[in-house]
Image (cartoon, rainbow, N blue to C red):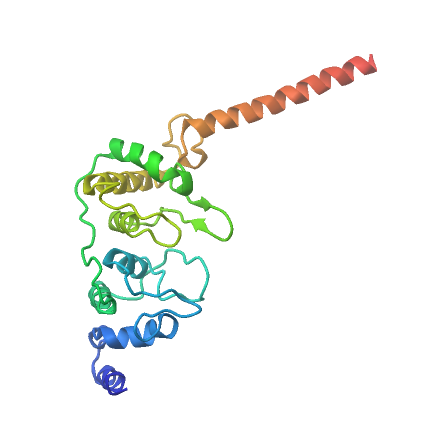
Length: 240
């Protein structure tokens, strides 16, 4: 109680809210504890934070998914509520809840190979996030979100953390270079999707999902036209 009162008093006299919000205990107590518990033990509306790794915690804060506006919903990517220094302090504070300290290391993103990242993305990510990273429903109430707003670092964090129902890819599955290649490919896809209209080779982009979707569209419209043609012939024959 004294800590919270002192923090509030400090906020009253300091001109910058960010300056007083550096106290991680105060931040956690006012923004997180009501759902996750005073010591990260969890509740009936939010999971325990004990044992969560630094990438997992930081990802949820950095993408604005936490603090959640409503419990038990699929949170979407939005502007983070905290500054980077505040998030770093919160991560350290939440890690202290675990008797056995989880990994405190955040992903190291290196220069990546876009072509190799494309192949790795197709093998490990496209099944849920879609070939263009535009997201999709994966059953029940779960959704694989669009990657259109994710930064290179957030992509790397998600791979290492495995938020929500996403599998966690450890270094034994995807190396740091693999993760960097995938993150760079996602970033490359974002820049292509943002290209001005008319720069897509071959006509309509169809959501930038590639030639497979374009071929499917061609077959769909072609078969439809063929069916209409056959029906027209049959009708003409009957009238004759």
